[in-house]
Image (cartoon, rainbow, N blue to C red; front, side, top):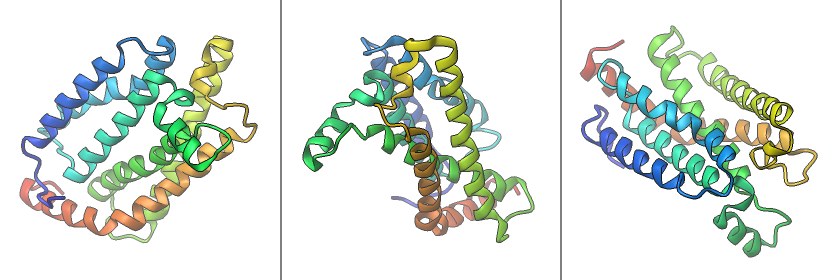
Length: 212
């Protein structure tokens, strides 16, 4: 992975690929309502990232992570999380009791937003270099995961059985707790694995763009 920290054409290429994949994911999804709910962050995020790219570009690392997260959301939206084929492959391979693609989705839901929030706090708050930065980053990931569980709950209350595919509990009474726990694990893993790389890219980005 290149360590160039001023985005060039790569973000535009990622936006274009994500846009194409978004359209493809919407062709014959298993459940149209679930698709709409799952891809909503992608449909909102792409225009937002394009609009802010000139004024407040992100690090290449973050653009790539957001693209990866978008792919997971679009795949889950197309098939519904309980029916993604790769989840069944892993289920058969490891002799699991359920399709665990949704577990991957919630792990990434902590992993990627953690780097997003870390970047925002590093650049736009006094927390750069503070010991509070990793702690607050994990707290944000947990809060984001909990809020997403609220959305699933509200969706179930409003839409009833129509929201079953969106909830994707697959009969697990502890599904909500697992989702939040995996998001926390994802956030911690992101900080452990990517902090040094992220710091290098943030330092170079702020130097070359002149943004504090």
